[in-house]
Length: 120
Ligand code: DGP
Image (cartoon, rainbow, N blue to C red; front, side, top):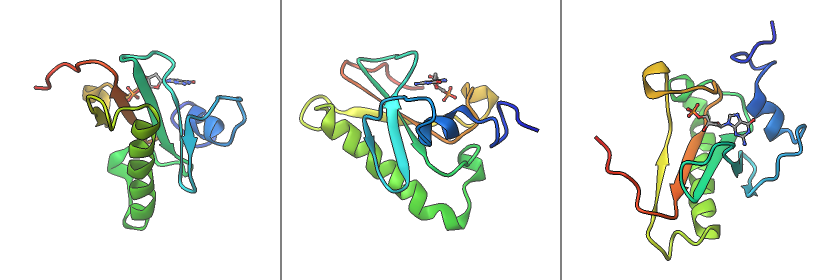
């Protein structure tokens, strides 16, 4: 059945396929990057694998090139946003309810452009 947590109903799959016309900040063989709907920092970009993977816990051994591709695209986003030569950036993924995951398609948040709050 297609619902928000299934591959069939997955919003990020639709964005990655270009079905919603969401502009990409960057893209590669394995992943696409687009701005978060609700930005928490001057730069807040989501990097999403083209393959549907529900969360970090669902990454399989065969997915290693995809995860590497997601991280490489996160760095490319930071470079394009001027964060490598500036103050730096943070890459975060939320896995599960306690972490606040709301979209069940693996994604990393690339955050930067101002002083980020200390963690923990
Ligand atoms: P989380 O699952 O908590 O790691 O964060 C999901 C993020 O995705 C949240 O910051 C809002 C963003 N988001 C949700 N739906 C859309 C959408 O349709 N388009 C865009 N650009 N961002 C979205």
